[in-house]
Image 1 (cartoon, rainbow, N blue to C red):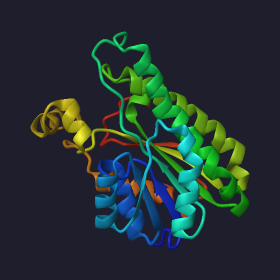
Image 2 (image 1 turned 90 degrees about the horizontal axis):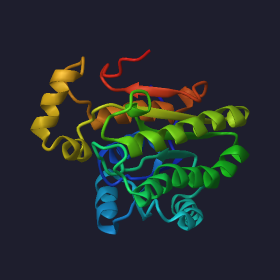
Image 3 (image 1 turned 60 degrees about the horizontal axis):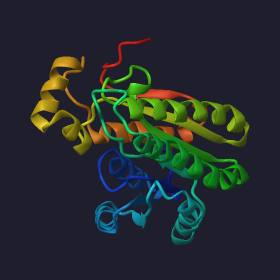
Image 4 (image 1 turned 30 degrees about the vertical axis):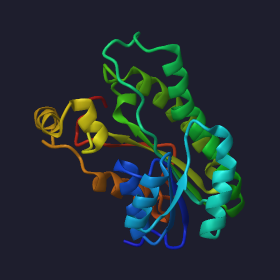
Amino acid sequence: MDLGLTGRVALVTGGSQGIGRGIAAELVAEGARVAISSRSRERIDAAAGEIGATGFVFDSRDLDRVPSLLDEVAGALGGPVEVLVLNTGGPPSNPDPTGFTREQWEQAYRELVLSPVALIEAALPAMRERAWGRIVNVSSNSVVEPIANLALSTAHRNALLAHLKTLARAYAADGVTFNTLLTGRIATERMVWLSGSMEAAEQIAADEIPIGRMGTVEEMAAAAAFLCSTRAAYVTGTALRVDGGLTRSV
């Protein structure tokens, strides 16, 4: 299936590892010109070289850096960002939902809400001008069924999900779509960190996920690539679960 991504300029934040890197690699394979960003110059350059992308240093907490990042990507890849994949690491966990500091709440808000909003606002004018754009947010199934120790993530990811729904309606006629991927338990370093070990993560998945295993980064990337494609032109304002049947709610 031709996804119509050949030559499109894409930016994937948090692209040095895990789901972000997997999505970036999939977009490269589909012929897109892909930029990836990360806080670490060493990690982003290594990942970019391995998957055929172009790396940029970007700290999601630095909102003032957003305009220059978009300008640098456009200059390096020969045009403005047409596909924007918003991927951020998760904030700290805590079994006590009242145990987070005010600073942790504010930092999570900056990383999971303000930074993605700033990136959208910077990329949107060029997308509207060309009457074509794809914005995909990598979120979590915790926005549907809250996870006990991830109160920071759940609260802020819900805020962004609601905002994207509003944006989807506002700019649908301009050819720009806004969609969200709700990740389940994907085999990444964060899942290992949350579970204590890969073996523990695999056992939890076998016990709790109907499909009997964790998802792979490649499976997440395939879903993301579709939402980024010309084929998905009539899909906007949606939240797609990629969780192996884990979510129980309708």
